[in-house]
Image (cartoon, rainbow, N blue to C red; front, top):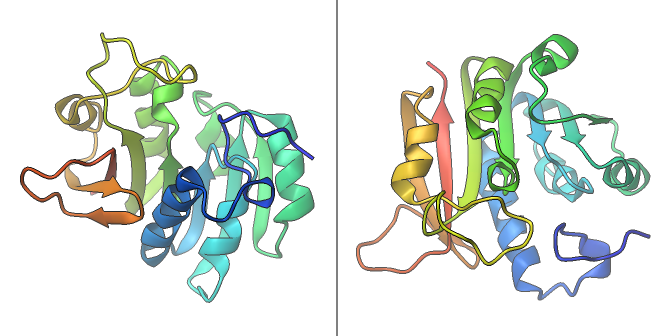
Length: 203
């Protein structure tokens, strides 16, 4: 059993009412309608998202989960190993990801980009991994800016909305949603949100 440190979501050892768990589940539920064909969950953690995405969703042909943590991938294979899933240990910044895994119709990247230096390399990887007309759904928490300290010990930096849109510039078609608790919506004026969820289209 993996230890709950606060860095990763592990539903089987968390309260079903845990706020962080509910937020993460909401992002997978939100993304489910976009998922079709070959789907990549990059930095998939322990793989719990696979169960959400595959349930009553015949549009997914294959669901690939990649994570840097070998223990997380082993856990995913032990607990969330379905007939359409396959899991790999790899680095999201590896420039050879496309050569190794091919291209995808849909990519999910939740709470990943803020964990390391090299955001432009990461976004380029995601762009290259997408098929033409493919869709990326990517999320990150709001912050004070890349040059400012952030309270989470696992984050290298946190973006302003303008900074996040700037790093997503390889994608010409982007729709910005904001999230608070389990609500993901087009942002309302003067309303406080915690996270950005962006739907990007490769055109």
